[in-house]
Length: 146
Image (cartoon, rainbow, N blue to C red; front, side, top):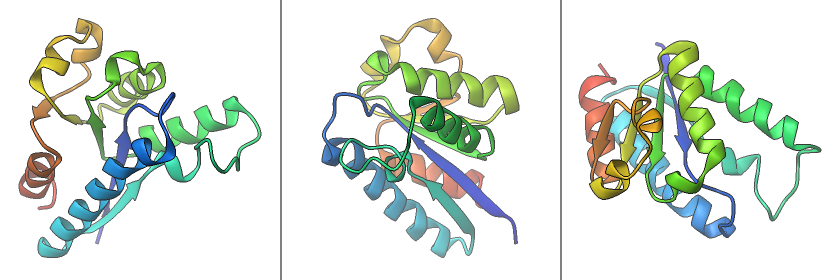
């Protein structure tokens, strides 16, 4: 059985460990529950496990960039949190690379207003916007875990 690889993208800079990680852990839990119901294998990549400001396991910013982008372009789906996206340059690069390297679908969640306020060049990287992460998980379950 093939494993569906899902990357959790979103703002990290300027946030506490809890702020950058809590939604990612919740999303991961929801995705694993959906995968279990669908009898599907998934791998969820949380970049906070490698890059955070509490435990420095990396030696350079270049190493972090290579780590993140390698996972981005080898993923099947990118889920992005719209909260803070407008000020997250790293996340914008991840979304760009996902689309232009491998045409990886990017599914966003958050207030629709946050999406509407994004620069058009960022919007074109996002194929779908849902209000909640639960809606994102339902969409992934219905259309990718098949």
